[in-house]
Length: 370
Image (cartoon, rainbow, N blue to C red):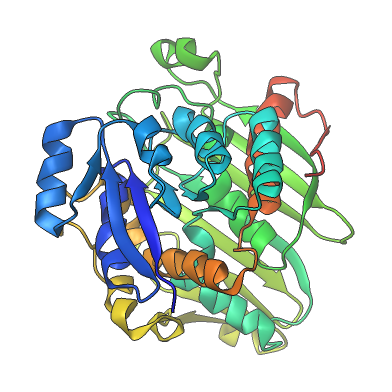
């Protein structure tokens, strides 16, 4: 059984994945890359990883590297992905895929040209709540799907670097991914409205005034549309990544408060009996035994140094080992991972073009074919 030599770039959030690759039967946790040499050596020593790089360019020139898993800041995703693909590496990259539609197109083309796999590591489509709703759908319990809705609300005050003032829809894959991903739909066009106004010192970073952006997405060759909404600053709301599905037999709604149970509505019951709270099962049994425990535990540092996105995001629904497993299994089977490059480009472009729509008062904007 071939093992793939994995290199992780970026050791903030990226370090969460090191123990998973160390345990996965298809992976050899080969190399790590971080500009800060002290941090690089600290993590390398902690996990016994000998091959270390402070220079991304040197990493991708290493002939032993099969897979590059990118966890760098958003504005570096496209550049590093393209360089790694063009160097003949398979690429997994945290969200979003890129910051422009042109970059998305370039990544799809490079993946195809080089014959290398690309996967955007979208946590929500491997979170236990999504997997539970997907299982209900595949068993026929939801009936005909009629509508999908998702949100991602988060208070980003105090986050570093490029985050202040970021247009909400520029980081939309956590809510676009599940509404497109459940039925493997392709977004055809989007219309988005901005609402409210953030503080002046935040607006100046991206010339984006909106406190909330809400978008409607129409799917190609489908009777379905979805609504997604996002907020990042100056909106009073506990962290929430919600995903809701309305079917003819059953519908599933996200709880209003983090940690509460999903609500399943069942049609044709007496009105008081329609809703019921349902605990979400874990789906560790989908995984190789060696990495099953990582669906319920923070993995690289369970105490004070756990990455903020992991803490606020409730552990991302146990998705990390599922993401790793999907990518490695796709490589082993020589199939496309989910989401593949065209799907990732579609989801990312929805957010980019939704913001453009909001700036133009809700104008309908077509999503290019990838």
